[in-house]
Image (cartoon, rainbow, N blue to C red; front, side):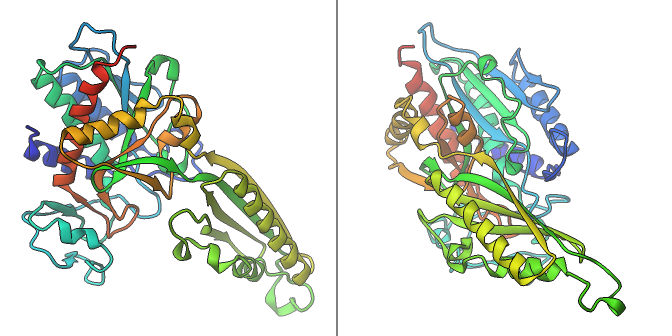
Length: 413
């Protein structure tokens, strides 16, 4: 039986370490807190008696739970990431634990204007009586992905306490900077030596994500001409105004707030600069990879139109690939999804095969040849002060993993 209190305490410890990723940083990891949390997690793995625990020079933590069976079973891996999103601060997190949730909206104590409303979170109606965790409303919680880390650590602890349970070798992989697209940059797949991997980075319970967006990042540089406003007539070219016109030229029906399900989007999420120069960051997302080039071409057409309106303005659009839809890569190992479904069935649960309007480390791992679907960990509302986690769903995630490792143990290598 999963130790709920231990799992909760572990999670609460992890979220209080600030591991916010720093976009644009040249270092990996991009923030020191990721190294701090990685060192803490490595110590906990060593305390379990795992002999090959390593936090490498990049902050990536790996370990192996030894096989308890003589069968030649495939090696499977579980992955989660240390960093949290730079979109909301993860510093000085004050978790609020709500035991025996009575239903209704959740008031966050230090931000009266921030309320987790049932109307926006209908899944709350199914969680009355459960244990929920939020913040005080001033930070994100970090359930994405410290819930995943806690779930994997609890699995490792439970398996060491129950050596009679048969399973093959299990590789643990904790990465950094997933939120800024660099999570598996320094992962050595030959050393990992796994047949299949699962990211523990999904929402709610009993979901198996088998598709993600394909993703590119566009950097748009808008160059103007600055001069003192007192002599600016017919001489100044205001890059701020041009950038505003550029953003206004993006189709509103392609904004994330206006799209759902399989519709892709263009999302300007960062703007910096002044009259002389403005830099925009725009993420491009679609489930069909060729559509990303069409989105990039749309950005270039809008840029050309703005240049015509603002004589002397120059706009460049540069894109780079971030990750690709895992759909095709998962077909290399059909058991990756089939066995996850079977694990749920053995618990009398119905797994929901889902798509995710985002990406995980599993997107890049799958692209590199390691099939890696994504599993639920009880996360809700990631990247936001309105983020919350359900402990009961985290427990369910551990239970699924316990079944999953036993299923893989009886598969011939």
